[in-house]
View 1 (cartoon, rainbow, N blue to C red):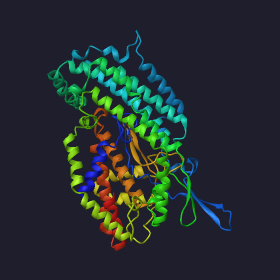
View 2: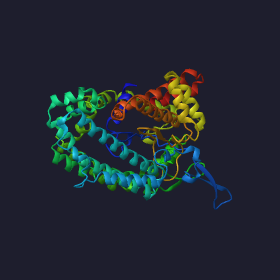
View 3: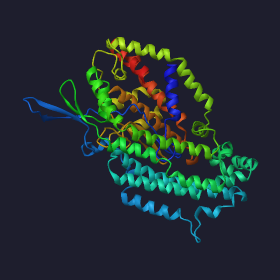
View 4: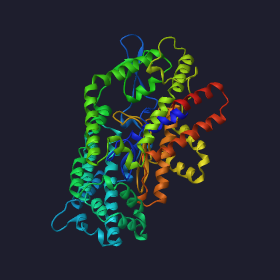
Length: 518
């Protein structure tokens, strides 16, 4: 397990896009969402009869349109804004507030006043926090609409509007941290200890630690202006891979015509039919390979931006720039990689074991990694069964936790977007907004992996609910490195609960192999 935990930690440290709509875990640092990248699960995809040219009727597999998904199985963004008009009204109001005029300087009216004492500082920080939360709310709503069908241009345009306003906000507040640091560390420590500013004590602690990477007012303003362009490469990749890239059909061994997509790929890569696995791998990754130069350029563009910011903020490299704000030593990260390399023999032994159990006589391929190590068909779960088993497994976390699970799992609660549909963002994540219940995106496909993913994402959701309940907005956020504790504990409780009650050797073998694979 040590090597597998090390591998997971490496991906959790750097597997997220900073700021804006980060696929990690949306808190007040930006749209952070924990994406289980390999778990773009699907429901039991629609199979509709289609007359073949011969006497037999062919079957066709594809994910449904959004309109075919029951409302009770969709999340409900109306708890954030009741209507598109309400969102537009708030957008226009925020635009006005972020524009400085000779008559109304907005937040800039406080420039030069941070030396005047705690009350003046509190007034400014309260205004900044309130404005940031409103901006997060604006972006949050747009992102939830965009991710359910990334083919639609309207919600993507709303997201871009919200990102632009965030950039404007960063520009009009770019003077704040340089002015604080100009007061000196002794004065800042006084603010950190002041009872009036207790809500912002963590902010001052982090500011003092980050002082050598905070630039002058003019330099910070220039960086803030560039921020809106910083993730164009990622946005291009995300939109293209989730909506514009088209996959061909293939026919499986049973004669079913399959319209390939990311969710369908995930289902077929675990097929017990080796020919089907190979065919889906060749078709799926063959499509990606056609656009390899485009993907290479988008990746290159994103790396150039990270490198630019790292140099501008006086970090030695982009890796340090990614880790230092999260208070993770680069040495720790590099030790994880060393530990993985030192223990690769254990992973190779496991792959050899898989090869033997699956009866593979020739060379084992990438397409042989995912099928379960049992001869019987693994159990399938409905979403209601999945919720029930997760709730039972998480009983050790106590009655308060169980009550929150009941609220989240109630059909029609609006917390969870359960099934895949055409154009929906692949993968799974939890997204939180202070003052609103979390939203969980799934692509549930009845597999045990889907159940485990539910446990994982609901762990993030409960973490957010409890953090928001016990902390003020300024202290409620958390970095992804800490967030994964809540989710992985839940996955572990689930698998341990099932292993404890399961006596069938084949089913135990399946659970143990999933434990290793996950």
